[in-house]
Length: 83
Image (cartoon, rainbow, N blue to C red; front, side, top):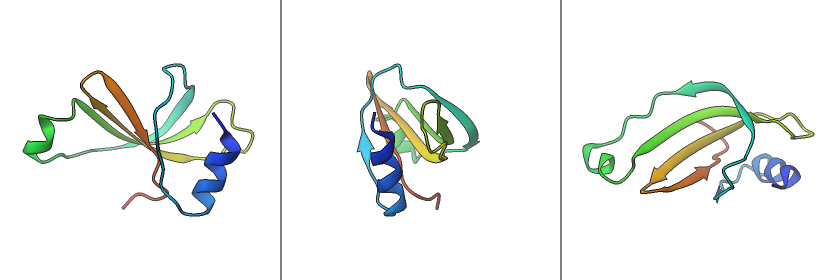
């Protein structure tokens, strides 16, 4: 994972979506509740909204991470701000 790229994207106030390997190491600093409409609950098995810090990030930056599990695949979205 390119931590410099993540850092640059967030500082540009952009949004990005990526799939990662299961061994991505991070610590959850804070979690927020996720409320999905009933129709979405049948599509998404798990959705989390968290503030995280990657273990090996030389910037020690905090990132918002939204994880979505669709069937057996996990997707990570890192928006720049919580709204």
